[in-house]
Image (cartoon, rainbow, N blue to C red; front, top):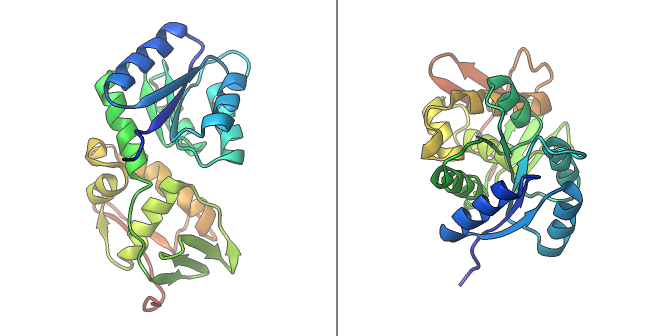
Length: 233
């Protein structure tokens, strides 16, 4: 039987760490905790967690900088946990690479649901098809993306969004369908998430992200990936 997901929680408040450890353990997760970036890095090297929860407002190396350091070494999904609740902070965290964002005080059941939702994004079956859109080529079997022949580095969430669009190339995918397929039913009405991640993809794929030719917006409806020709098997 596969081990339960291992969660690394990092926060400078011991009370918060203890709460996270107790609540998530009761939900079936394995949990390791750290009070600073140095401890977190050592634990990550030793245990390779399945997902990490980073408090943003930590002394020294904050959660966003720690997330950047993790991104350079591992593909661990990251949920930012913070007392900030402004939309601008949420958008900034997502743009900088967070897979999700939870505001304190949080509902432990919601935190567990969001962890499961992020981990679900890493699952899926391979499809033997290559889709070309302009200078971009998406290989759905190898899970690779190239632009003008050069590899494009994308995150797991960016891949899930792009692969769903590519699998349905030239079709308009409803915003709510994308939210449910990529993030899960918990995110059905969170259009801000979708806008942020589409923007991130356009920055990497489009020659002019402000005038996108590959990922098209259909106002009030959804998005589509504009395929050049028939997919290659």
